[in-house]
Image (cartoon, rainbow, N blue to C red; front, side, top):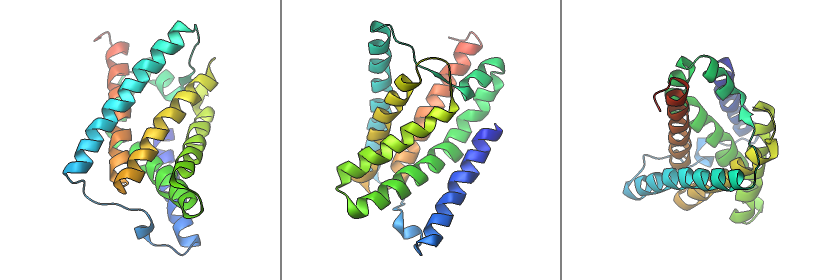
Length: 190
């Protein structure tokens, strides 16, 4: 739990420092209340991420590969109540914090000098690679590969909607669904 809280504070703090360093205000990061189109993109984005996860899981399984496990999941398996705490934190800290940093600032900054597609790819690669530090077990590159593909979707939704709230909600919902599933699996509810 402390890692999630620290991550939220760290990502938010880094974002504020970056904006101050560059003498930018929060208008650099496009935020607004989602309209109907944004809501449709959010629903489609959540479905897309879950669909990609299912496809990736089947491909990994058919190839006989393993995916590493995030250390948060390991902790939650030992204490399933942690998953219940992580569900709201996915919406309050993880989704918004990671999207502010990687899509809002990294992708936004790269987009200043690069084509949007390149900015999305580079920001997604950074996002995926940073997950290496939270992984345990075999298959770290498999996990990072999956995170990269999922990050591409998040980057594309930000570029398409020009509203950081959209990928933040998609990301938060995706994680919340993952934690709900992990809780049900850990407690025998699934």
